[in-house]
Image (cartoon, rainbow, N blue to C red; front, side, top):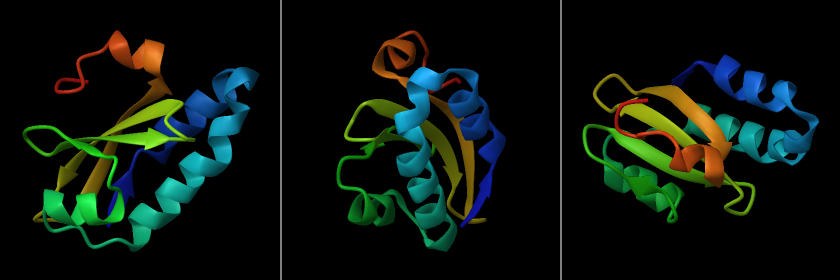
Length: 100
């Protein structure tokens, strides 16, 4: 998969030292996604059983033992993952995962 906007993850991690525990799990997810070949939501679920599949290609991943949420939009036909949001559960609750 081609992953776009790693800068979203970097910005989150560098923005506040309280999120230092998100660094390794987020980068592990990124490396996994780079080598994945997701052609459908079921492929994502095979790799990440706790991922939440939303409509229109949106997926929410639990990061760092469910401490953080990562929202992506996947274009399955072109094998592209767009990182749209990463944050704590409190921050996630303030957004609309379908439109972010």
